[in-house]
Image (tube, rainbow, N blue to C red; front, side, top):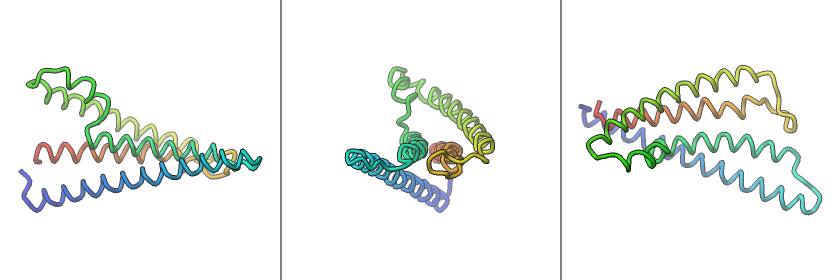
Length: 161
């Protein structure tokens, strides 16, 4: 069992992590909307934003990864909604544990492959903006890490380890 101080620390850390993820998603989504709206408006006047579609694509990678981390934290990912509601109550905990193990293994693979991808493209710059492409695609292993962290924290808090 977690002692009260340790449990309080874990709860506070978990809440702060979730708040960080939520704030980052709000900032990224706002930036995405602003860039797209500005590009559409300026394109109407024949002044398109140079590299805006590339920047939107890169922001979208980060947005998806951190949104997925929030979904894992809130238990709103695909497996929960589709499968759990159709299973008898006594088997739900076993299925949830099995799903969490599969997600854990997938996230380890995602982080590993994301790091490999970043290493492979480390010398490449984006065509329009000229920024290193690993800045954009590092959202994959970093987002995967945040998803993994949320999953582990959820498990620790649920099992009172």
